Image 1 (cartoon, rainbow, N blue to C red):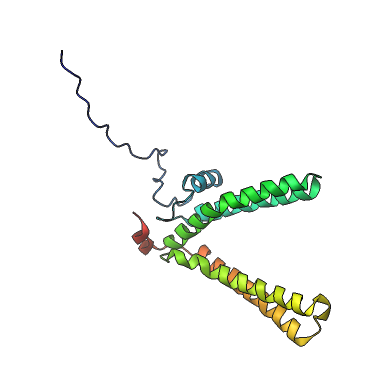
Image 2 (cartoon, rainbow, N blue to C red):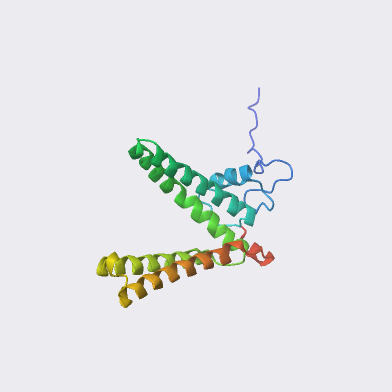
Length: 181
């Protein structure tokens, strides 16, 4: 009797439904549910690309969950529990939110480091406004210096918001394929 021969099993292709691109490719025209599933399947995948719909459906999902948690915290008397759940949710979605944003920038043929640009404007604007309010007080907004710092901070926050929209809303570019594996 001879020993059975064993061979290495063939490598299986990623399991996808017919017509659905592999996980390492962008999925143009994806629906809400599919985008949420891909958002979590590609939890910490910073390489590759994400289509516009893939990014915005995931963004909407996170915004809806955040809004629901905030409303629950306001309505229920167990705000502490909801607050803890909200913090856990936020911490749990930082990585996938950054990764889908980086992949969206790749689809626009931009470096993933551009993800930091709108945040810098937002954080500097917040710091400027909060510093002015803490230094001068909210009652002294009639003072030209305090008013100017608060308005300057708000303008920086708005610039960051507009910049984020410009980066993430734009159409896909075929040159972005250079970021694929």
